[in-house]
Length: 328
Ligand code: PMP
Image (tube, rainbow, N blue to C red; front, side, top):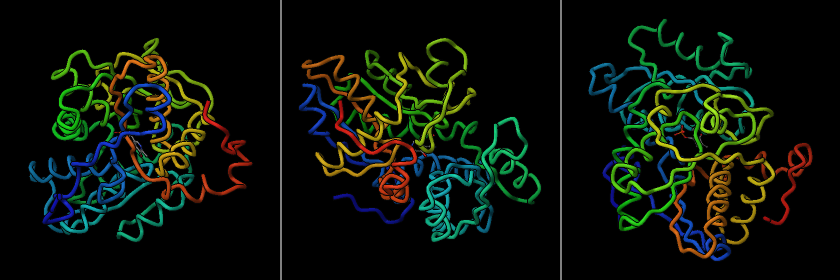
């Protein structure tokens, strides 16, 4: 039984769950790290804790201080979750097209949210630049800067990587992870490559993101778009630059949504879109190694309830042509 004396302490140490339906189909062991069980409900609680810890250690953040961040939502929720207990004010800039549950959650836990129209990164009104400006103009405010602040990847190196290796008694063959800031894959891949060098590291990427092409060709190209939230980028971040990656998989929204409903119905796990993207990637790798018994690990980044207004809405599924079909 895990006992925590604070919300702060309760981040991480998540279960590693064998996904029975996909493992039986492939003759491999596919495991998902249940990051939706973190106190703020996502993997980004780890990045939030790493960045707050670093800012406190550097003397930049003190009781009553202000944290500012630009986020697709989960990092903001992670920061606000941990800030409540420690007495910080949190200001979040966020594109206005994310699932409404994330804004509602942010408000419930006391963050100040500024929703901005989505635009290309080069535009000064991009949520990233707006967060930076707010922090610069507010005395004593700290910009978390999850993309370039390597306290993010470092926290995964210090916690996520060791937890996985310990949970599998050192027997991991493949790690599959999507990338938003690159913190998860940046920290976890380096830890695994150092301690189990023959681990294969695969990045999963939705359409419209440049990460897949960057691994394949060195250029951040990529057409189209995706309904998956929190994943995909068209530039090299300091956190992703740390990652040691062997190959990349491009995954469609159709493959993602069919996986999301497959594991909901067969395994009782109703997960968020990035988790389903990750699981399809793990499944694709398992099919490549069909019957080998290889141990393939990925991340269940957050819970499907965070996207209910989208993935459970029949009109939304119709509009996106994403009514679930049988997983191929
Ligand atoms: N899944 C979700 C739902 C996210 O919001 C994010 C982060 N934006 C990730 C996965 C990716 O994590 P990272 O930033 O560590 O690459």
